[in-house]
Length: 439
Image (cartoon, rainbow, N blue to C red; front, side, top):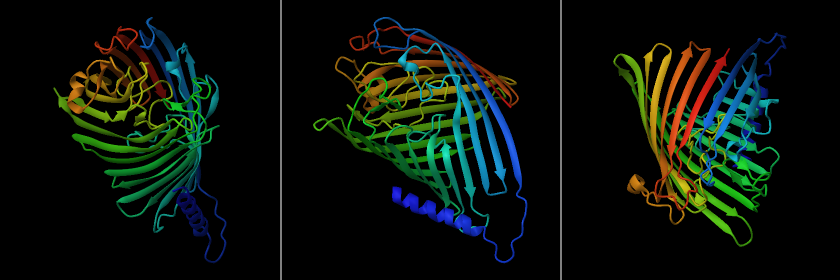
């Protein structure tokens, strides 16, 4: 796969250069150059009542976080574009390891979040293509396997139009400061069907947890951790109804030492349905979500580069629990593998520029330690243990395109029958105020 990508990149670059060669007389023409600047500023104040269920004592936290970016886009004619995003993240109060994120060591310091060049083929080229080179946000489908998490990855990507309905994407990247390669291909049929194959080759010598290396914290040393993913997604979002069905498999092997190895053979499935309409002549939306992640101990579906963070905080199923298929923001005891979610959400715009909504989630685990209790409703689809439930509520005020204010409230209740595993049984509350401005 890596060699095919390199050959195609060379062919595209060659065709790009050759296409610009004049047929007869050289004529000097000044290129069309344009420059655009955009920026946005985000601020969040959050108060958590309990975030760590491995601690007997309830651990609360109050967090202030800020994000600022300046986006510079330069266009040189119709075929070359430069995009760079200068960003700064700032946190205050994140004393607990649960708040670790990819940008955690860059507090209030400016850095290049993304910086890449875009090369496009000529309009009448038989196989139109676009090449992206530099630090960029790789993203496919719902971000289940591939997402940049608002920090960017250094690499290259090529998009080729094979036909009117079929597009081929290829990408290759390396993790900063680590011997960790990441590459893959994606077929997109008419924006309806996506099929992705990608590989992670982690030879860094350290395991990754929640998408972060354990090199500087837990220091979980390994020989290698190689994963291959096959992902099929079918999705459509119409004016009134939308849906997304996704199924993926993970293969590969984790080698901790010469004797301890884990052969990956796990899978996940997700279903999401959306309705758009009106209630009492007010715009409204409703959705239902179901995800299942098979697991047998460490043989669980756990993509390193899945979408987990938005730069300021952990995101996922539930505003507070913020889970994906393998981990969550809330710190839960060891021994739980494969997180499943069943959720429902509804929002409405009762007044101009104001929207509000509510969500409810049931969480379960596909594998759990002895004494974790029953799966409750999750037994219907094969879950082994309950992982609690969450209720979310939000109110949002939006002033045109420039200014948003949002208030979030979330309540997570741990599983009632897991008192032998969970160190405390207190519920967790989140009160959060967020402000976003963009110009």
